[in-house]
Amino acid sequence: MSVTRPSSSSAASFVRSLPTSRPWRIAFYLVALAALFLAPVYLQSSYSVRILVLVCLFGAASTGWNLIGGYANQISLGHTVFFGIGAYATVIFQGTLGLSPWLAIPTGIVLAVIVALLIGWPTFQLSGHYFALATLALLPVFHIIATYWEDLTGGSVGISVPILPSGLDTLQFDTPTPFFYIAAVLLVLVMILARWVRQSVLGLQLDAIRLNPQASTLAGVNQFRAKMKALVMSAAVVAVAGSLYGAFLQFMDPDTAFSWNTTLNLVLFAMVGGVRFWWGPALGALILIPFGEFASAQLTGNLAALGQLAYGVLLILLVLFQPRGIGGLFSIVWQKATGRKL
Image (cartoon, rainbow, N blue to C red):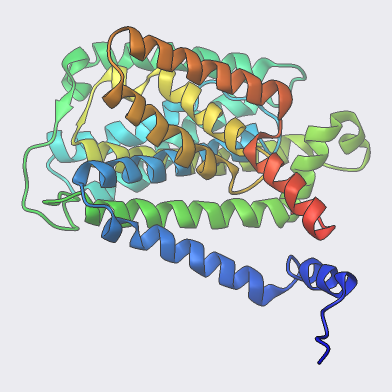
């Protein structure tokens, strides 16, 4: 009895149909969501769940950075300021004023947007790298303010939030699992926003600005307006992530709020995951944060230095040989397998 085998052409046609099949995409997103929200069930330690909280918060913050830094290629070296503003808002509201942390989130957003407008309004009307230079100057300025405004920020010692009854209203919990779900919801919402921006008219305008600023102007794109919209959304997203980070730590000081390491990480997560992809920064955070935590926990002394060296070398190799990040590598594999772009 002969067995009929599917032809290679029909198999290829089936595979090529997957990327454009809406049910397949929905199924993939549902599986990814299920894996995300079920992760604490399979993780046995609170430490692992805490790492996932950091992945979600910094993945959301890096996605926020990518709205302006990746989509429009307007490199910001001071987004930690928005992150720190949100974090301080939460800790001050709870630790100093005795108010709900949920009131701190909109306050942090408003303050971050005001700072973003003050920076973007003059610099986006000029050509060149004035925006990058202006954001670079932000970080030490806010670090100094937080250090010497002791009545509000606690100075270099920082502010601690007192232990309050566990619950959603105080954002204090007996285990990190409830906070993980809050952070995961934030990450999902931010990624939805990033995907929407990518596919919107604003996303097309930002693409045009990134690829050829002069040609985009000739095509009728209002560069100033498009950049300002992206910056405002970016600052707001990063501020929310910072607010939840402050609630998670229950403490904040100038070195934590306005750290150069945080600025570097927000950029690196996006670059490693892929700045052209709405899911790239979250992927970068998912890879680099657990790697960094593992290296810190397992490697000590000279081994720790070797771990940091290996980390740096891997990043350099990635930038040199795969500048589109891991997302770009996935895109190449996907396109070869299906004949369609990811």
